[in-house]
Image (cartoon, rainbow, N blue to C red; front, side, top):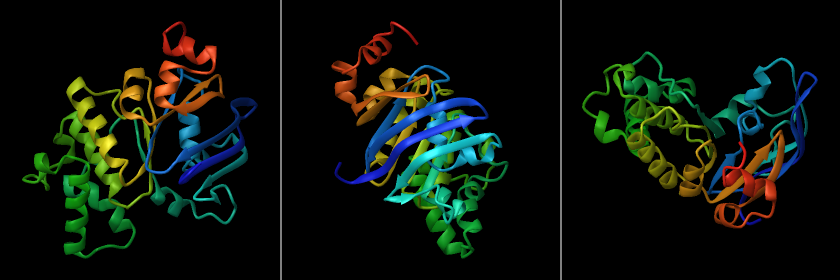
Length: 252
């Protein structure tokens, strides 16, 4: 596949004795939106978190197989996990702004990475807020608490915070599931815009959302990757009956 960004080979993941992912092989292209769909508990979020080694934080996890980003195996013992998580940013289901000002939320990552020059930080903050489509709403109150923003604004702020450390991949775990329809539309519009610069992998329960914003869709069921392909084909002419049953609402 041309311009491949993420590639997994025969990946298995266990929580203790329970298998959560069974032999996952998938190739995710660069500068596209890839949606992961499937019923609750089918392994979508587990797979997503394995792409920046967030699952390392769980004691009982055991991973086999390979995950490559830019042809580098991210589970190689020489990988710097901190650098990996800079390159592969994460936006969670529930927005989680820090109890700091809007400015300091976005400047936090660059500061940790050693950028303390006020002019440089100001530029990064402004650019990140602009890229997250929230600058016009917050530019006059950058030093107000981020906790005063609405839910949708907080989620876009968290996206700006992710962008501020200059990632290449953005993982999103149901980023709009807690938001009203208007805020959801803004997040979706933003995702489509961001793929020009970033590779985006998004877990969503909302089938219409996957159909609207993604280029490719992967259908997971009971820890297995049932089908992966162009979103239009998955939604209109899937190869597997299981995929069709899920998409048409016969189960899930």
